[in-house]
Image 1 (cartoon, rainbow, N blue to C red):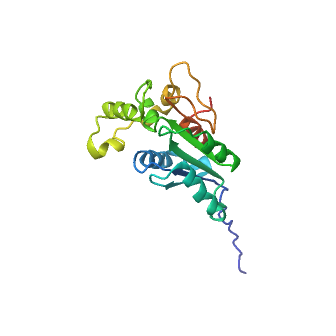
Image 2 (tube, one colour; image 1 turned 120 degrees about the horizontal axis):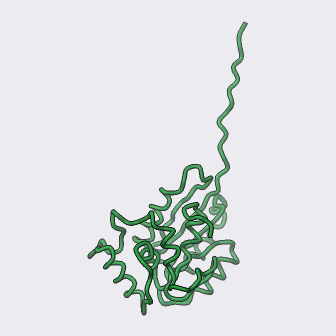
Image 3 (spheres, helix red, strand yellow; image 1 turned 90 degrees about the vertical axis):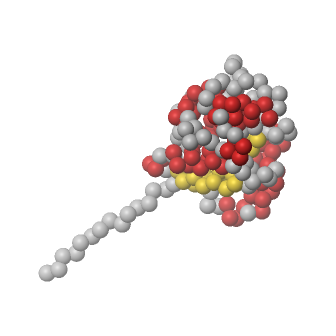
Length: 197
């Protein structure tokens, strides 16, 4: 008499797929790739990164709109950009209208990186924040747009508190804060890398 052995087929858990798009060619891309590796496997999240090196935020939005059907595989789209001395309120409003989330660092992404080391300062312009970051990391030349091997990723909770001037609140999702500030903590919370506040 033959015995029938039944096996349960492996069930795949539903995962939320998040697309992270950035116009930063080196620094932001390196940081986001490191974040992706830190997302816990049991988080139910699948993170993909798409660099759009040097493109204006509005151009990124237009390109994503053209690809709308190709984006159906993504549950969430986050677009990470610098302020670059330009008001990004219109860009953020368009993100919200399209169901996307815009993350703006004012004056630049280095504000978020600096906050991993210490409290941010008032920067007159982007070059001041970038200079401060280079001083903290001692990176020089071509490496200055990257992350040091010993970057303190374990200090994201402190960075979330130090990424705005003392006494200034974290800007809301899809909002542009004053200089210096960034809404990166919202992304880290979404990825499960920062506790809810």
